[in-house]
Image (cartoon, rainbow over all chains, first blue to last red):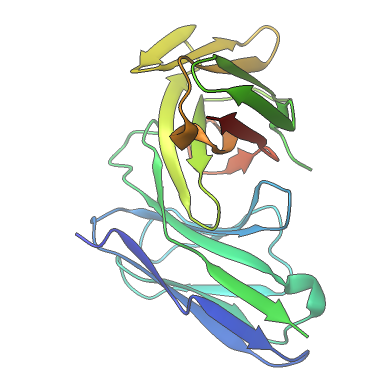
Length: 115
Length: 111
């Protein structure tokens, strides 16, 4: 199993450009998450999807949109990138199956720089 | 605002010593989890403790939870150079969905 995969690994954008970060998991998990991590800080939740077809805002959703394409894939879109969105973005997934006690599995991250 | 806050921000110890990291949080939780992040990598889950548990062990890891003080500690015994990483606590809400991570403790284990 590949676990959680993210593409691309690195990206440089100019202010105002748009892009989509892709995330896929092959563990048949119901829940998926997008976080951003700024230097010296912990992760902040952008959006999450508790199950296929549902998405909810996290702590820092402004400037982002998400799509839960199917059970495996959860994408994050920046419509008009800003320098403040320079960060490392992590996708994670979690098996729920009625339990709230399961851990999250993380992808390797996407390092995004907005000039 | 971040719910979990780790303390200390950075810790440097010699190989073989024990390392203790603390985490405080603000609101009621369903569970608290500890994760490790090696430089430039994603987070890896270490251990989860439920809100009705007080202590949990996993190998060289020992986690305690004091819900009255809204705090948790992670103890790594007999540390190794490979334990050098950042350690984060994360709290899950009552639905187990909205996770909040602290800023982390950077642990350096010197050989």
